[in-house]
Length: 327
Image (cartoon, rainbow, N blue to C red; front, side):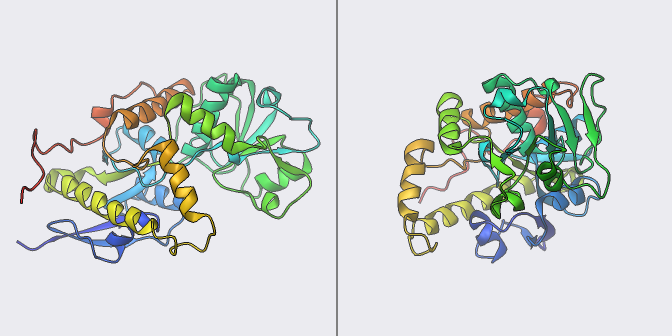
């Protein structure tokens, strides 16, 4: 039987490099790997246009797509995680010194649904006492998966020509939660500062309290692929694991990155987050991570119900004490 042909759209990461260059190949599958697509576009093209067989996709949007009955399934492979405290920006003239100063303010976001924004909104509410309904929200993009906001959620979608960055500089917005560093901050614009000066300390404290290294993206697969080739998800999962193992091993070489303290940063990460902070599967830590995100989404009125993880992700078990080869 000839190998099946599947497309995989994902980020260009060290932990997926071996899949892209072909040094790791899923058994029985030939992958066409597409990496030259920004995250927001990739999520839309997978969920809305169904252009890829398998894709790295926003965890938040995947939850809403499943809640809406869209025909996708999840493989418990989490290619992107990131702490979010460093991506809260404020206008320096507004007197915002602490998270609670955001209450009653106008706050922009790339989209209300984005995983990065959902995580930080949930963290602000549950860790800092800033209710999400106490803020006027302004979203720059339409949502990957449309949802009906609760009547008491103050959410406005900005017009096509609006810019979060320009509105923050002018003071039309008091703050912005973003998925990435915004250009005016990188360029040192005096009107913009981070809310958390020592964001790393806040992120470390959050991890120590919750054991959560926030999952941004999950891996989606078209349901028709699963139905036609029920063996494919496990073979893909095994290949993702192999590629990650190769990528992490390569990163231990201090010559890989042109940074003086590269190895020291890796050692610091190991001490805090453990040997495999990028672990795949529905492990206890990942369950806590995902169930927290589900709780945030449900609490924000986006999910109609708290969906059990067993409904969201395909079973990767090959049988008790099976799945390894004895030499």
